[in-house]
Length: 147
Image (tube, rainbow, N blue to C red; front, side, top):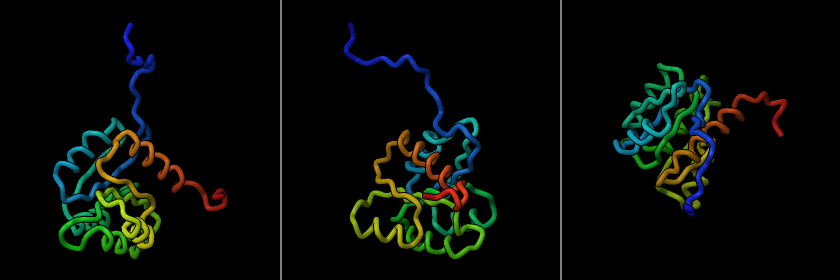
């Protein structure tokens, strides 16, 4: 008898509703992991390697949510989020920070500039999928239903 627990459930996708996600990260491995681990038959993952490219894509294409790294060359993640929040059509778009930083100052600063949620690398992609689903569900709730 095996001591390993065998699940009788079949694999299911967490991101099971149509969604367009923009991943902004200078690390090509992180972008590839995001594409591989978050893509589903109905979840489209697009990537940008710089904050400037990410901002341009957000202005010209419709996305439901953005995943943004903090430590990027150029304008960086904090400034990227601040600029996103200055754009009328993106003011309420959910933004999840995905970063190697986990210090209190970085967490507080991310939320101050407009982050919706915060995830620390190395990423548990299954858990992040559930977090994306939750953040999107909450973003879709009318303000009158907020606690």
